[in-house]
Amino acid sequence: MHASRDEIAGLTIVTHPLVQHRLTQLRDRGTPPERFRAELRSVAALLGAAAFADLPLALQPIHTPIATMNAPVLVGAPPVIVPVLRAGLAMADGLLDLLPEAAIAHLGLYRDPATLAAIEYYFKAPADIADRPVMLVDPMLATGNSAIAALDRLKAAGARDLRFVCLLAARPGAAAVRTAHPDVPIWTAGLDPLLDGQSYIVPGLGDAGDRAFGTSHIEDAQGSRDGA
Ligand code: URA
Image 1: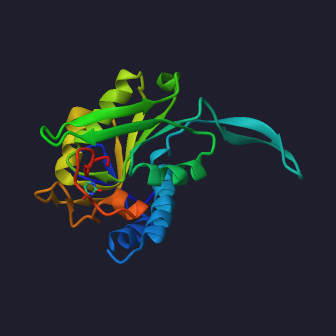
Image 2: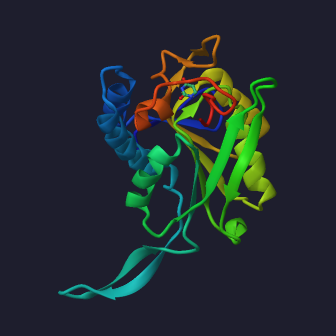
């Protein structure tokens, strides 16, 4: 596997050349929304494949046109993919390309402008989430506030087998998530050093939701960078 373990325990940077090339396209401010969406969809599938490398297999007898054999198949309940609204949606289709049988849960969070806390406004997940592998998905791990709140919410709903996939993480936010949820591994394409005064990742790629959906950033009561 093309991956490097960072000194943040439990965080894996997927160093596969196809992932790194796509991350660069996504960082480039000249990449238009339609290409941004396509690149994000592709890189989500590549990151998802790395993060789901531990899904269980069992041998099943099958007949090829030539012979019978015992061949590996996925076993267990299909995973649940949980995009954080809104930007996480831009990664969900790539993960469904990878695992069409997965369920999609939705989690809406916005940042309270006064306290900067992540406030939930929507949550819908399968009732049997406790028995399924769960993947939280959000392109940008900045302060970590929304990821921590999302993982709190998923655990309160019963999720036990959790992993978090993001396109790009900031070192302080990644460390905060790992401190709050040391049982949840993080998979990312890149780890940037810092945040600016408005909690944008530096050098980052700007506002992932705005770039994916072609909106310009307007700060309002529900406008946030984490999970917007
Ligand atoms: N969310 C984004 O979309 N971009 C950032 O840089 C940080 C959070």
